[in-house]
Length: 566
Ligand code: PEP
Ligand code: MG
Image 1 (cartoon, rainbow, N blue to C red):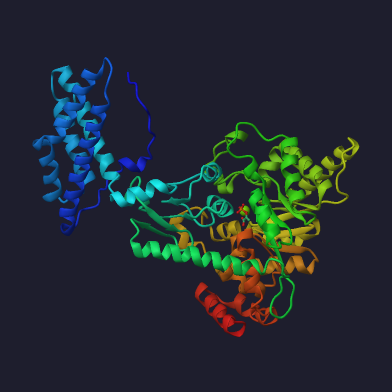
Image 2: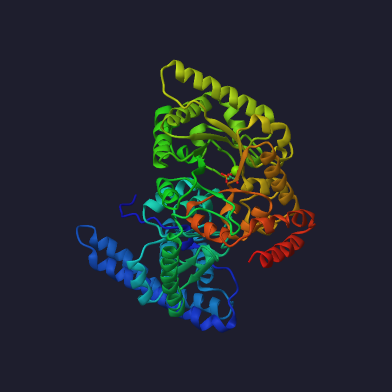
């Protein structure tokens, strides 16, 4: 039995660093261990001084026993030898010594003595904790005054909102990718995030001061004064840059040769809606409703959804809002609310429209809520993961049924609500000519289109180099989709992460895109970029782009384009 105050720690605290220790670092490592042992003894001393009451004497005996162990040359010299002669790092040496001593105690016949192995474990754990906390007192002082950066192996999208609300300043993940839903949501929350920092958990210790850069992917542990100066310069520059960009908020979006382009916003939160309005977005091009469904015990009912959608529609003050029907599955881990069966391959499983059609009641609830919100401003409905025309036929039938029921129950809803499909599965892009008549508009989801075209999991950081939006097959599908929609007179936007990435703006213009939908934080930068580009000139390069057989040749055409439309 135990009575105590719990302090929950991240697992990184007890991670053992198994990398071999270079000879040049031996003295420093010994010094780190000495400091950690000293810190553990000080902690025990403080604990002892605080004891009072009837159990104080007994507890003090335990503490003294632990302090004695820490002073015990035999225990500590073994650890120092492991570092000096064995080339172990301090944490690995501690673990080895712990294993040895525990084995000795376990071999004892006397049950009392055998149980004393716990003391060894506790003492060593205390030193391990001290090692992990190893940082200069200056740093500790600074760290105590600033907020936290979460370091973890992974974080579910649904966990990010409470983290941001709790004031976490940034996130470093040892896995993940830039186009994962976690990363997309982090951008929406203005939460700097670094993904695929593979050794983050072993290289960063609890309470370490770290400086992270979500753009470059840098994580600096124990930043130097030069790093901190760079950080201050970045803060200054980004403030200046946002003031400069703010001047563009009221401007039209036009290319240098005067072609009007529509910049839509992807929105996940109220802050996104406000930013979209403030940046002069054409409307909301993608509202991912699945975030309403995550991390909760029961499904949001029609009224709850209606209120959320109405808030969105009202927030956009008459500009069109594109609400996407539920796209659960794949990497949106927390599906418990829907009781989905686990799947071996969720990215190819029951997600998006497939899930919707298997649970028509779930879809009716959502469609009814969206239709009711349409009474408050222009709304479009977007269906994710469409592969076949039949899926859209069924969705349209459901939509008609919901509209009819609502009208006969006396609800006010818009005369006409447009129904569109996400083109994010290659089959849909290829078969679009046969499907386009059924669609009021088209939205290209490159995050998934790239994943499914190249058979590269968008969340797998080990395949990040293969996840290539500039693959010839991807460009062909993009160009075909844009052309098919435009020939049929249907509006086509692109709402994957590519749309907000300025490296691709000229490329997308060249392929004929006129509607971009992106995180609102990227909108003004893309507007600024567009004003420098000559669409007419870029369009002339489309054929060369589509002929180029490799990524490298596509890059070469892009470089030529940059010189013809600087
Ligand atoms: C996409 O796939 O490009 C997209 C916009 O949708 P999501 O990122 O939610 O899958
Ligand atoms: Mg998608």
